[in-house]
Amino acid sequence: MAPEEEAAQLVAAASCAGELETLVRRREAGEPLAWLVGAVEFCGLRISVHPGVYVPRPQTEALAERAASLLPPAGVAVDLCTGAGAVAAVLAARRPGATVVATDIDAGAVACARANGVDARHGDLDGPLPPSLVGVVDLITAVAPYVPTEELQFLSRDVRAFEPRRALDGGPTGMRVLSEVVRRATRWLRQGGWLLLELGGGQAATVAAGMETAGFECIAVLPDAEGDDRGIEGRRFLS
View (tube, rainbow, N blue to C red):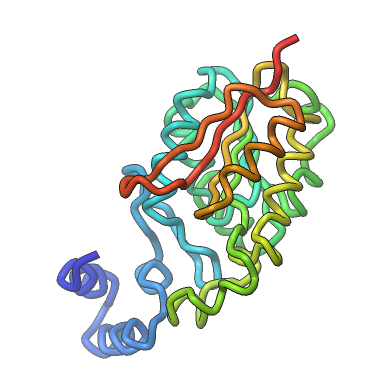
């Protein structure tokens, strides 16, 4: 975002000159703009972002829109690692007749997602999902932590200093949570249901192999606007 756009948002968020000065100082120190102004635009929606909650990224928008296109109008979707609930909010907005349930391990993120109108449950991955969803889910999405632990040091200083490490750290190879999501997804998806995951550079082949082993077909890598691997999708085998 251009500096003048950030400045305009800070001015709009401040109630007086003194508050504006404080916001500017906090932003100069690297605090995420979304925490200071209270929200971020995502796929044309205003998503509230509470301090301490992972900020939705623009590069995730393509995955959210792709997921919405795969969700039947009256279908059932699950968004794991929902964070502020951005992807789940897009699914609900694009498919108002669908059932969308989200989960996150962080209680603060769950509260934030609920503030965005998302049916968010607190717990680890699929742990909080109701048994009634077993085998009937049309779509599962997840923006799981996928940065390899040893590569966290290469993230920008502001991200390292402020954003929650638990939302970033994917373990030694970055695959810890991604692999777990793939493994658990088949329990919930109906035959023909879709799994969409965000991932990092160099992980597509490994994730694709894991998805194939777990029983997925039609596996495809989703590039971002720069042409880099950013997501992956697959469909549970039809019998």
